[in-house]
Structure formats: structure tokens, C-alpha cells
Length: 368
Image (cartoon, rainbow, N blue to C red; front, side, top):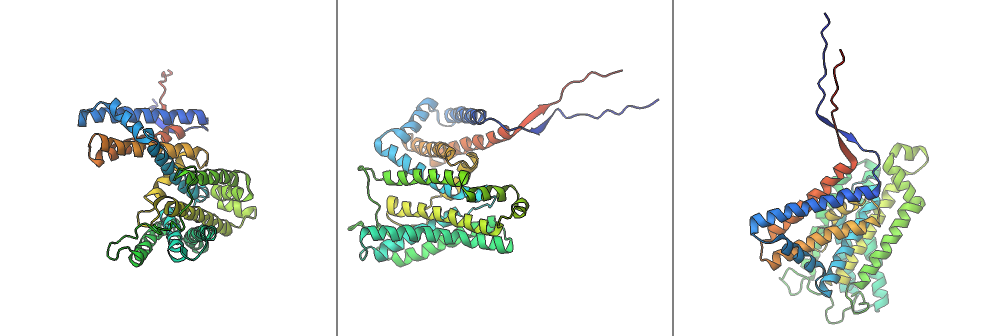
């Protein structure tokens, strides 16, 4: 008699999905957000005895409740979107640029230096031009340094760019010590408060309108650059396969350094907008963690600059909304962080169901 050996099949296994249509993918993401809101509502009732509907209404009020809140939301969205646009070319090339924080600080520091040292000596148009060039150049150099070592010595770009953040923070801290007003305060204070030299102009009585317009223009330009330019094509090829890129004659080292200079330059412009158009000062917190959040924004949008507008809005909405909850209901800031964490967890988790599926075992009848 022959013994039959039966292989026990698992109840289910994970299988890679075929390409999911964009509409279906966003349907999964929206479903994840709804589930996150339901779970957050349940936790809110359990932990605070508050009505979840009142809580979510407060979130909406925190984002759109007044004209000031609306423009502040647009400003936050624009700055996050700009940093996400900056890291996208590098990420599409599979160069893991974790150094956007430092690149933004480098641009902001260059802007502050121009405002402090040239604010009283240069005409406004010339000063603004110098600030734009200086901030873009500073960010580009800060991005070029890790790119150079990656291209020449194949260093780990993740660790390198991450460490560059801390160097930038300490560099800013040093100049804050030199420029602090008053001495011993540990702060620069509002730069050129009386003359407003180097401040970006206000359009239509809206402080942030120019920032929003600049970011929209850069968004369109970045979309065109990545999708239709020769450089964008080379970035895509290098990201798909370095060996293929070399085989068809692409100078991979040149592409790496050029792309990181562009990423750094855009981060530098973000630093300019934050220092000259928003805060009118410089601090170690000027970047505000946007360099790390921007990675999530870019990744969720699949490196599409236009879609990043939506992903940036989602992140900013829940961030500002959760802060409003803490203020309105006098809750600990940690509670708003919990809500944000739940939403982000569900959004990130939804990507698993977009890219993979659970294939369950089918029952089979034994054949005798």
C-alpha cells in the first residue's frame, strides 16, 4: 500500500495585486480614513465622555472656522506640499533623502543672513533676488554633499542625509547665538521689524497668498519636469534600475548629484518662504518636522506632484483639527496626538490592501 502524503495548505496567503485603478485605490484610502474616524470616535467617548460629532465639528472649525484659520491652513498645506515636492525627485530615483529638514534650515539660514547683513544696504528688489539665489544655493549645496559621497563612494544616503539634519540644526543654533536680540535671549527675534526689509510682499491683504501662489507654480513645474523632461525620464530609469540606466548611456553619478541639488534647492526655497514670508525670523524649529512628514505625503501620492496637493491637505487637516480639539475641549495635547496617530496608521495601512490581497484556501474534495 502506498501512503498518501497530503500537504496542508494555509488558510490564506498574501498575494501581490495587479495594478489597482486610481479610483479604487483612493476608495480604499477613504474607507481607511472613515474607519479611523469611527475608531477615534469610540475612543473619544470612552476616554473623555465627549460626543464624537461635536469633536469632529470642532476639527472642521479649526481648519475652516474663520478667514484667518482658512489662510493659516493654506499656508501650512503649501509649506508641507513644497517640501514634499522637494524630496520627490530623489525618492523617485530611489535616493532616500531624509535630509529635507536640514536643507530647509540651510535655505532659511541663508535668507536670514541676507536680511540681517544686507537689509539696510540693498534696494528691496535686489535684496529679494539675492535672498532667492542664496536660499536656493544653500539648499542645493546641502543636498549635493550627501549626493557626492553617494555617487563617488556609495555611502548610505539615508544615514548621511539624516546626520546632515543635525549639522544644520547646530549651525543655525550657532548663528542664533551671534544674532540673538536681546543678548542672552537665545532668540533672533523679528528680523528688520521696523523696516520690513527682506519681507516678502503681501498680496491682496493676505499675508500668505504669495507663498501659496509660489508653491502652486512650483507644483506645476515639478509635474512637468518629472513627467515630460529628459531629466525626469533619466530619474525614472535610474530609479527602476541603475544597471539599465548605465547600459543605455545615462551618467548615473551625474543624475544623482543633479537631482539632489534640485531637491535641496526647492527645500531652500521653502526655507526662504518660511523665514521671509511667514515667520520673519529663524530658529532651529523653522522646518517644523515638515521634512519627515513630507516623505509620507510624497509616498502616499505615488510621487505625483498634483496628487500631493490632496495628500498634503489630508495630513494638515487632521493635524490642525486635532490641535483645535485639544484647545476647545481643554484636552491634553497627547490626546490630539493619539487621534493623529490613529488616522496616519490607517492611511499607511491602507497601502497594504492597495498593493496586496489575501487569497483564501479553496476547499477541495478528495478524489478516490
